Structure formats: structure tokens, C-alpha cells
Length: 520
Image 1 (cartoon, rainbow, N blue to C red):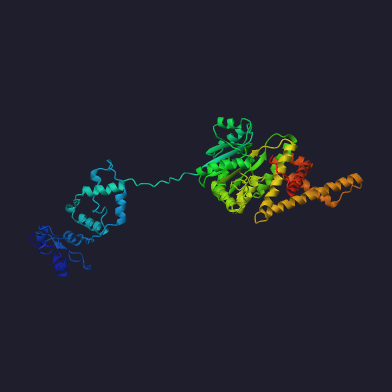
Image 2 (image 1 turned 135 degrees about the horizontal axis):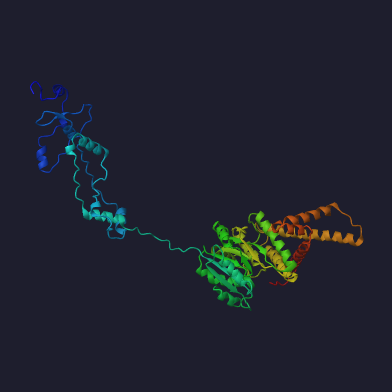
């Protein structure tokens, strides 16, 4: 059309005000280098405050930004990295892994060359988007370079190879239950059933039949447990346990646990679970809190009240106890081995000199083992969760024999170890017991004198003593119910108190006169 210039309006102004920098112009030899397959390294670009470059399209004279952008956003090749020696650790890890076939679920088309970045840099993404918006005809996807299947497959195989896991071949600690039994055919089945009914049952149950003359060994075998019969043992329970432990130690580790339980005792279902919890907390020995079983008539009733008071005292002391009783106790094998070594090297009383876990020369082996653990720096506890039922003596004669052995054994254990940082409280308990015996003698003597010679008067001192006795009897038996509390207020249990104090006096006398010991 006449009068209309083919150039865009203001092109003269643009030509005068805008000039393409010399470093952005295409060199004449660019075509020759492209034909030869050699790409010249472009000169570094400078960021200037110049306006956008407008380049006339060939043959039209019109200006467009596409050509200029094509020149300005061309990616700059990254500098070539210097070759470095392979990492010895990486090379060792790669060669040490076992080779496996590439999973067939990965298609070959999904294998990309590790040399091509999965995500372009922000500058490359931005420049490509500008070019595509400016000229849709040039919107093309650059061809993906062919992947080196050999190296790529090896790389992916290294990622899919299973990593060798080093398993801990150290076995878990086991729990071995030892049931020393002498003619216990009637109570043994219940003891074994109680162990099998635990929430954390033992791994092994071993019945230690010591000179039994009844069906104790055969009953144990019929019930499917291990039975060991002692050979030429004259040291009662302590000697029987030493024989079995000497045979078990080579097969056990220091972390394994041994339960020693009387065959006439029955554990509550959560006993072992609670005891193992305290062993894991670092205690050297864990004992039980026992209650009296049924039977025994009036004598058995008195013992059940006595055991209820003992459980109350342990509960008030949060499990702190003076003795780990032989009714049921758990020890780590490592602790028992320390006791054996200490007996042999002189840190503990040698006992019979053979280095057994239990001292066979004493009457109360459980009390002596408690002393040994405490002198080696270990802690003991009788948690209120570790409850069990034990047999009661059914006659005054049997009760006398049992308590005389207990009392004399405790006194002789104190004499055996002397006055130490551990035994001083036990000595204090013996002194307190002796004072109680003297008070009881004075109390009964005063009442007897007044009854025989007349002149019975209510003395304020002895009245106060009587009130203290009544309150103590009532309060300490409240765990058995209000009926037992009312009965305790009648002070009928003074019979048992005086009976036990007589056992104390006899035990002190036998120890001083060195009377022959008898284990009943």
C-alpha cells in the first residue's frame, strides 16, 4: 500500500537508539564450526542495563524478540570436571555387595543415563519457557542422548542389590527354674503348674531330688520336666543346689537367670515377670513376699497372720528387705559366679572350702547368700508384685524346729561376718529382739507377781505398754480384713509372740554353747 512503510513505526528510532553488543553477534565462522561438529566456546556474557534486543526477521524487516532470546538464553556448557581417582571405600563397598539380576519389573525405557540431570537448572527452565511462548513453532523437546545400557544397568543393579545384614548371633538370656525337693510328691505338681502358668514362664524346669524316698523323681519325669537326683549329698538343700549349679554353669552365660524355689511353694502368675523387671534394673537378687497356705489349724492361722504382717512391712519399705528368702529367689548367673570366686579368693567366708554358691556349713543358706551379695556391692529387693504361697507348719513341734533353725542361723551368720558396713543393721535387729524378750519377761513377771501376792494395781507404764501392743496387733493385720482385726484386739496372738521369743533365747544359748547344729 502506498504511503505505508514496510518497517514498523518507530523503526528508525530503534535503529538509532538500540545497538546489538559486539559480544552477542554471531561470528562468521559459526557455520563452519557447526558443520565440523566443533562447538566454539562462547565468550562470557555481561549483565547490562540495556533494553530488550529487537532483531529484524530475515526477508520481512519486522522485529521480533525470538531471535534475540535464542541467542541470549543459549545454555553455557559447564566446565569439565577434572578426573579424580576413585574413592577406595566406595569401590570396596561396590565390589563387596553380592551381584543379583536386575528385576524384570523395571522396563528398559525407564532407564535414564546418570549423566543427564533429571531436573534442569532454573535458568535453563526459564529460558526455554520464554522461547516456547515467543515462537510456538520452535517448541520442541530436545532429543535424549542414548543411554549407555551397560554402565546404566550396572549402576541400577548396585542400587537393587540386597545389603548384607550382620545378624547378632548372641542368644537371648534364658531362665532356669530349680526346684530342690525332698519327699515333695504332694506339692511338686502344684509348684510345676505354677511355673508353667507364669506370664513369663521359665525356659527350663529342673527338679533337684535330694535323697527322696517317695515318688518325687518319677512325678517330675511324668510331668515332663528335667529331674536331677543328687549323689552322696549330706549337706541338705545347700549341697544339692551346689551340685546342680556346678553342672549348669558351663552351659549358661552371665546374663542367664536362675530361679531357686522350694517345691512346697506356689508362685503367683506375675511373679517371674516382675522379678525379671527388677533384675534388668541392676538388682543382684530378687526375692518374694510369701503368705501362708491353708491348713494347720490354730498354728497355721497364727502363721498366716505373721506372714501378713511381714508383707505389710515390705510394702511400707518399697521392697527393701533384710533377707532374700529361700521360698523363691532369682539371681543372674554372673552374680552367682562372683560369689564362687569371692569364696575362693578370700573376699567372702570360704564355707566348706569347695567354692560353692551356697555355704553348706550354715543353717540358713539363704540368709548367708544375702550377706554375700551385699558384701560384693549388689542390691537386693523383695517387690510387692512378687507374691507366692508357701506351706505352713501344722504343729507346734514342727514350728519350733523351723524357727529355731532360722533364729540360730541368723545369729551365726552375724558372727560369721562380724561387724561390717552390711551387718551392723542385722546386729541392731538382734539387739532389738533381745530387748523385746527382756520387756516381755518383765511384763509377764509383774503380772504374775501381782496375781500371786495380791496388790494388783493398774500401773500407768504397763497400761501404756498394753495399749501399744493392742494397737500394733490390730493395725498390722488389717490386710486380712476387719474380722481378723477384731480378733487381734483380744491379744490372743501374744501366745505366738512369746513362743517366738523363747526360740530366740534358745538360739542365742545354742550359739554361745556351740551346740551341734541340726538342719530340720
